Image (cartoon, rainbow, N blue to C red):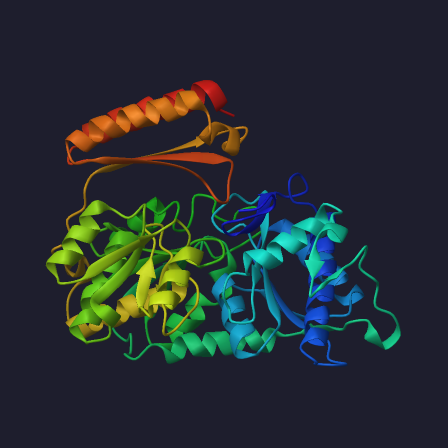
Length: 465
């Protein structure tokens, strides 16, 4: 991870850590860089084409316009998807052969944060080498790096006919909606389904998809005002959806985060279905239909130990990666596997998408429920989940905190005690927020709480924000 671009883009409080000046310079760099790339590949007199989407935060418009100003002034054409989801940008970048995709979103973060996610021409998270070059430009170190065999002191402005154009590309978002509908192989007629759109990017997409597939659709948190994204709503605040499903006697509910690359669900009894449940359901279903390549599911180090043991009983192996759907995708691609994801709800069906896609995940879960002729609560039968405690400690400097010797000692002591009883502890810094995460896992919740709090208290005492 770099100085600005971390696990999932450049993210921080709008106009504090991430400013409109940053966005403009990122646009300047990308427009210029992909122009150089075309020259290097002998695509003469062809402008770079870059597609942009955004979520519903008030600051998203500011960053969108700043990015576009930078892109067109460097000679790239900027295609605007307007308010849309991160997976839609990945999909359109890939299928419509754009040079690059940009999503303006801070995902599950509060409204006052925002972020810039970069996507390569294959619909994948941008290569770190390109992000590193962009960081060099942001820090006025462009002349210190080599780009396509040369060093540059500055980025020139495009002039005359080489100035880029801005193109309204709402048709791209509509094509993505059609793609989602095409993945619904069963009619949802007769099913009552709730959708929690987190007042985010899915608010004008998810209902259209479920209505088209025949569901009786109930929608909550689909009235974005620029400051209510993720506010007691969506996959990170699922209590409202639980209550709504029970009170309205619905078959299932699906909750997305701000940019809809995550999905949690609520069964008809009001139980929360997280990424562990989803990977278990989907893994069993795909194996049953000979569609789980190499009988293997990709998880992350944060996945519940019970998930791996439960899948193993079904004849399914697991491979663990670092946290982030970026790393899950890299393993899926490298090993030619079909299913992977995170407990946070990023789920990737590799034959259908290159990134987590909350709406697509919910469509596939409906397919499983309908095909198996079961209630949603029954699809998790056989899954044993170990108790966990996760404490997120907000700190002033996460790099300083993670390297503090006092915290390392507290972690090692807890690790030694938990290993004696078959448990574990994970200490990691968030890739998207100034947070240190402490996760403990054991067969008894009280033990999880004890050791998680021991380590968290040391972090708070020495580095708490």
